[in-house]
Image (cartoon, rainbow, N blue to C red; front, side, top):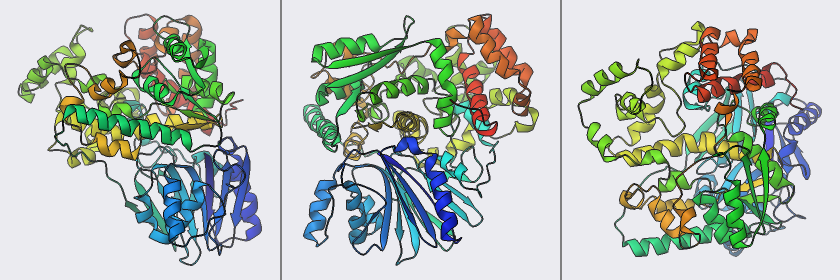
Length: 615
């Protein structure tokens, strides 16, 4: 697990060395164990190393035999030994046991696209091919590892994190204000272009080539579903083996100790029950209903595993926010990023690698929203024009049970379901924004290209497809990578594996959501490893008591102080956002999540555009 950065430039070699070192220093947290550089008249590459595999021989940049091919790589290739054996039989010579060298020889043997289709793992990498005189690179199937690039006129930079670009004197740091409205709606950055103008994410499952100033991006992997009729008991047996093999794979590819995160949920509990690490790690809050760490401790005791716990205070939560927003690169309004930061800090004091349960909900239909009660299925069949009228009637009323459902179901499905993390509608975002940033852009405009691909599929498949393209890569996996790497810790997600997905995509819906139970088949498998209380537990997420805290004067005033800053008027209608805060503080409405969205953005803006000191 590491980080890389670099750029293409024809300037003098001496200037390149100074610049690439400045860029590398910005991401030292991703690889404090070592650094390496490659510089010539066209390209500068830097690599930061966190030593996990082949501790003695895995230094990067790495080369092929004649040094005509150079690579910098971030991630883990779990099937590297199998690929190495094939390549050796084909005459390739290896000087190390690390997976990076497998990528080099695999590229030589099969070419980039064919190589990518053979890989099992998480990865982002850059290859400089001197003979072909181009740069190429790729990102893994699901977006577990980040990949950013800056393209502006003749400037082309690339990195594991945006902040490294700040070390290049020609980087033009400009705010992409168009990203803000959809951030308020989704709680994370949804566009290919980031909150920094001309800085883009390479999409999951994509690769690129860059030659003579031309960037060509192509897709090598497409998320799809191919439901297949199977015997339930056979399916359960087959999936169980695939899951256990993946967990063991993710443990084996390491020369250092591997621990595991553990909450009270089924995903991490199952991973721990199979992996049986020596150490597990949990965090919670000192408030009833917001501490799953006690459940984690209980399961660890049952499995006879050492559990390390931390309780996070309100002060610690607020103190960490500038660091969290700095390390995520773009604004992040998922409250769970903060406890994940502390969880990663705790784990990094004991191990270098942790397993986690991300990806299971998206692949096996684990979110509560994936179950639709019969009454709502019936209601959704009422003509849309009638449901719209009902929506408009009930919307102005004070809150009552069922109101949100009537409002939500007054929209067509493609506007009603925008992903697991949605917070508000387009009209609400416009009310919050200042006049200059209001727009006619709607949620439908953002989601239409994705919905077009699955317009003939069933509702459950559509929900899973949307979350696999938005919520998972752009929120869940992003904060997982950034919060762990902020603490120089490698995170592995064995449930989100290409082999697991290739089987999961064939499972009929009735085995995913059954009798009101989400993630049905996965829970059945887990129940053979962990107590039923854990396998049946309803999805909780990572509960954070922010909404309760800001009803206390101390934290209410903290948020209010930022909302009243002069620069806040550049983005928001101050009267509107202060009213949201007052209504919440006086317990008239629960506006906590909307307030946090605004607050998180303003802190991020301070960090990156006011040079706010994070330490």
